[in-house]
Image (cartoon, rainbow, N blue to C red):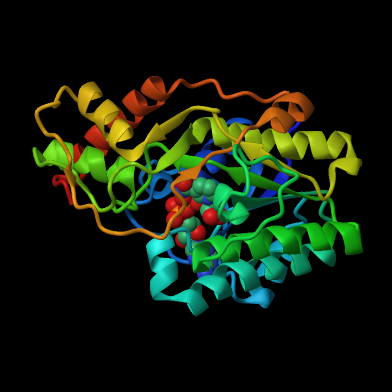
Length: 328
Ligand SMILES: NC(=O)c1ccc[n+]([C@@H]2O[C@H](COP(=O)([O-])OP(=O)(O)OC[C@H]3O[C@@H](n4cnc5c(N)ncnc54)[C@H](O)[C@@H]3O)[C@@H](O)[C@H]2O)c1
């Protein structure tokens, strides 16, 4: 019997990129998965591959504390992965209140529900964006969270609230701060990697809105999902990890233009050079982390090199577009 066998696990955000891969890996490890589902997007990976049918589904919105309580109480949940969020920077600027409600209130709802339930491990998705503009790079976990824009700030708040619940209520909760994630199943086509792959399949140059020089690190979603599981396993073995945050990254940095060029090379379309609009951007020029703490304390390290992860991702979109009968 493995750690996850028959373990009742509550996941929010299972119809999204990270949540989808986490659900798949939990099911593979024979966990019993309970999902909070706001809406069953038909194109979502776990809807299309049928994984969602193997989960218990609780319909509800993160903003609804009663729905979060119902999910935990009715199903005797042991482990919580709070992954759901309004995850887009641009949408955050357009709707700061909605973003704060989903990401901040949504997080305290999940934690408040967990406070009154016999939950043993909680892992909450934060982000590199939670650090805000860098006073030094690469980010390490000793830096304060200080996001300045709506999405970033919402993640800073959710992150800090998780640490508050661990410190004040002894909740067994950890925070995970990931670099930019990529992988099949991401239906946010205004993100660089899905957008670049989609444009290239269309035979069109990808349009980079900025000057393409922003430096970021990128992590394959399968590596991230396994790391989330590792955090819960370690927390189960060592409760003193409660309140700790872990960065997850590959320690490899690229500009947006360099990243798009890797996609073009892997798709054998170097002729489709990106169009660079050079629009002004208030996002940090450089944002990257190191993940020494996760490597040392969790024994985690990313398995996928960028080109391997991107090749799998391109294959995933190839079959997704073929099944959809269009490039959307
Ligand atoms: N994608 C990245 O590059 C990245 C990087 C670092 C951290 N993160 C964090 O990881 C998590 C997952 O990101 P993602 O890219 O997989 O997101 P995503 O946009 O692909 O999926 C978001 C999920 O949250 C759900 N959701 C949104 N609002 C909800 C609400 N009000 N009630 C219930 N469910 C709701 C959606 O239905 C979906 O399942 C987020 O917390 C995000 O902030 C993402």
